[in-house]
Image (cartoon, rainbow, N blue to C red; front, side, top):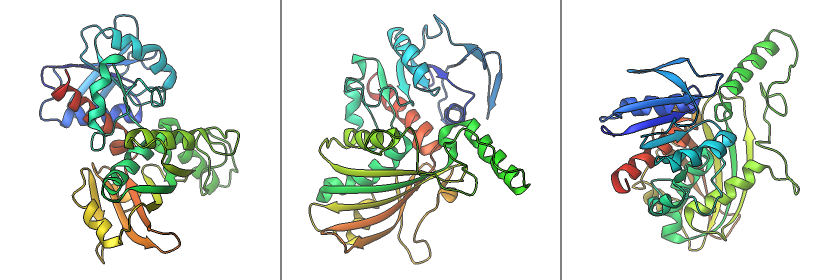
Length: 337
């Protein structure tokens, strides 16, 4: 990226700052880095590693001469400004939910479906999936290729960081208040999150599933290229600041022993397997900051024909969001710009 001009929309947020950190760590950082934000954040100075830059106002002309634009500012901002950036000639990588189910916009996990980037010019936008889908698909894809997938049931346990900086502050405040006997004061969550588990990410839709769960199912099918995959997701918010854990139970088309699954997953791109006696599984806290998706407790499920169960952990701000977006941009630069 040494000759590229890059814009980051939402650079003051958790994911935006992580994108800046990753760009700063690259051996070839961008030639120009333009930070863009709302009237609330414009004028602020962001420091991340060797990067020190002032946030400019997101406005007409903000994307002139920009090559790659990261959007880490939510679906409403992406709806209004991502097409503007694309029309200005920038390759847009959007991390919000706005374009993930748009059939014209490629939804990409670089380790799984990089070929989907071939169609990015139609809208000038590439969507990055939710962290749930990033972690899930890098594990499911090699298994699907080897033995086929019949059914997948997932329970996710998400830290609050995926809901943004205010959510992290909200968990901290709730915890302090309760420890000091000040009772419950509702923050941005549907129920108290401190010392609790809340089985709701997004709004509850008719039928009982949440928007996040419904979207994650469809996103997974899109990334895997399997629109008929039988799948169920239950998403739970837990009182953890960073990280994401997924309990995955699946049925395969062909028989697959646990040790065979281990051998399939070991060489899979972006996957780190935990399968030894003294390292049987990862936890979200332990893998925060890791660039890999970690999988462990790989075991047969005798309750179903060709059943397999496993546990996945990843950094939901890093690997599940910012890193996936940066890797998308690097593929665009290498193969398509």
